[in-house]
Length: 257
Image (cartoon, rainbow, N blue to C red; front, side):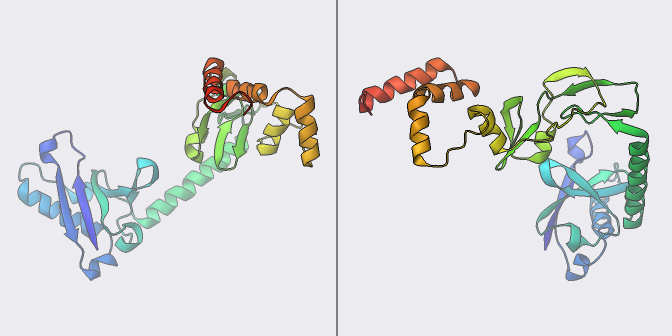
């Protein structure tokens, strides 16, 4: 098992250092603080005038979305660091697993107490919490519910801002500004799906159950190209561009195709 140890937590790039270590078997099942100690010892040998103090350092590793997470000093190496993983030496004292668990419990308790004292804004996408009855803070929210269609996620009022990552979706800025509210709209849908979108586009109860139904709709409704054009227009595609593409296809394949 190999790991790459990096020290970059300093504005002076001349003090940065990267160390590649092949871990002995006994280290894999040992605490991460052993890696920290090995790096600090190696670093201090070549930086006599800028030595690091292991007691006020900790290590971090890569996580999702380009974030890093700090590692407990007594966490087992093989459990928290992948083979050929990057480990970052950072300033700030490390914590033990017990200390991390205690902080999590305390944070959860504080959150529970806060939720008991406050209510959450009922506007779509707003995460503000405030005392019941106000005062109400300013609010940036979405005008319509979220849409979860297959793997795509977006707000019904902002269909051009799609995401396939839930965290990114949640952070899409609201398109409306106002004041938070605690009033709930009766029978207000919390989210929409593909069926809801089809109902909005074609009208409720317009499901086609057979090919004959489809043909009758084609004969009685607007021409297919006109309906298709309206759909693309709703997706912010210019009507002129749509017409140019259609004209090009007609020239290439003939008017009747």
